[in-house]
Length: 108
Image (cartoon, rainbow, N blue to C red; front, side):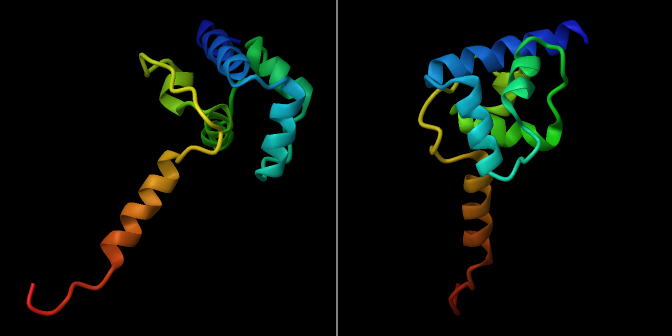
C-alpha cells in the first residue's frame, strides 16, 4: 500500500480511539449500518494501511467515528470527533433537498 493509505489508517485509528470504541465494536457498528464485509481484521488492516478504504464505506466509517471523510482523507485540518449519531453530511443534504422539494405557496 501507499503512504497515503498509511496516513488514512492513522487517522482512522486516531478517530476510533477518540470515539472510545474497539476495532471489534467499530466492525459491529459498520455491519449494523449495512456494510456487511467489515470485520475486526478489516479495521485492523485499514488502520495499518494494509487495506485501502473503499469509497463505498468511507462515509459510513466517518459517521461511525464522529468525523468527516475529508478528515480521514487528509483534506480536513481539524478532526470532527463527536457523537457517532451526529448529523452527517448525507443527513444535512437530505434535509436540504426535502426543503427544496416543498411546494412554494402561491403569490411568492
